[in-house]
Amino acid sequence: MELEGDKAVVDAMGNRWKARTTLLAEAKLGDLVLIHAGFAISLVDEEEAKETWQLIAEINAFNQTQNKVSG
Image 1 (cartoon, one colour):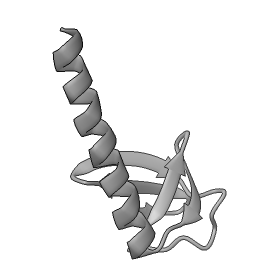
Image 2 (cartoon, rainbow, N blue to C red):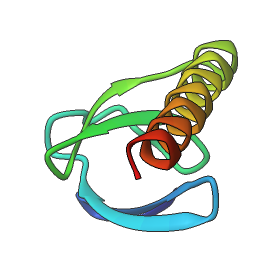
Image 3 (cartoon, helix red, strand yellow):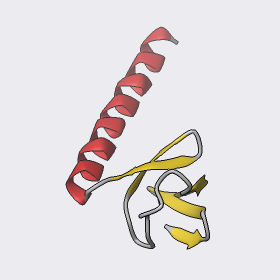
Image 4 (spheres, one colour):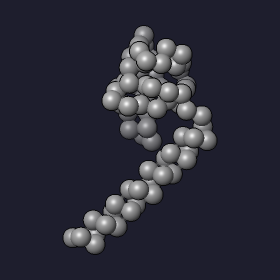
């Protein structure tokens, strides 16, 4: 996460997103954060982040399978 005032640029698996830290004043450079609607809303520990990315990967794999089946 890059941080300048209440503006941040976060990296999500190689994708960069702009976000505001207005709702999470304790966020600091290097923190893992949950972003919703362009705002950092909570700090996330490394284990929770790994589990979340794993679930997202599983959902994406399932969706790709469904798209191939439905044509």
